[in-house]
Amino acid sequence: MALVFVFVVAVFVVFTLFLLPVIFSLQALGSLFVYPRQLAAMFGNRILRRNHALEHATIAVLMEREPRRRFSGFSTDEGFFVQGVHSLEEVDEAAREALRRLRAGEKGLAVHRNCGTTIVAANLLAAVFFLGALGAGLYLGGSWLYLLIVAGLVLAFVLRVPLSLLLQRFVTTDADLSNAEVGWVEPARPQDLQGGLLGLLLAASTARVRVFHTDPEAVEVVRGDETVLR
Image (cartoon, rainbow, N blue to C red; front, top):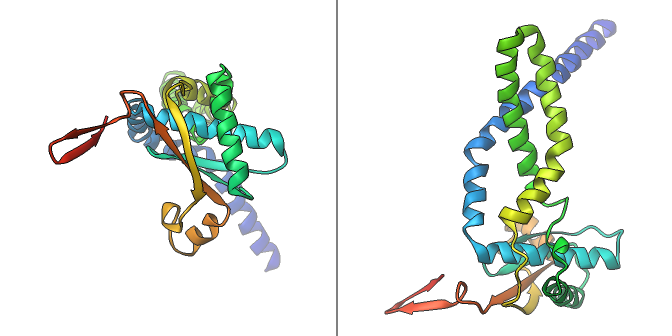
């Protein structure tokens, strides 16, 4: 009886592993309906792209100082958040140094291989290669289809970082911080993160950096009783 159970489990595991490339590729197809629209929206928001660039640069500076520590972050129209910090002072110093270095021409600080854009790139590549595998499989014969799907996933894995760096440089970040200033650094609020208990736990090691932009694209324009952000 035990041998039968082991055999059934083994068959299930092998079958699941066999299907994983297909399952992941099908899941990645959904990214074609989501990520391009999100990338287009971010490309059209220069303030968010600049904050994103400063977020990356700040984390890069923090990691230069302590390479073994892990940091993460995300950006908003008002600034950005850094997770994994020990004090507000270290984030304030890193943000101001990052701003100075970006202004001095170190644009490489604005892109990072571990950015969430890499996940976007991997899914988009997997979806495109999957569609390509379907077309090639129909042309070459169904016996090639599975191998083509696996090859597409391998290519997506290999190319995800180069594509991510390309997307960051031209779509999701803008290293022109000549008219930006770091305002202040404050503790993050739980509601700024996940909310609830998880947000409370994350907030304990998260700092919020407020960034102000003084160029015409970032000033508030008052029209009657309305204030809009250009």
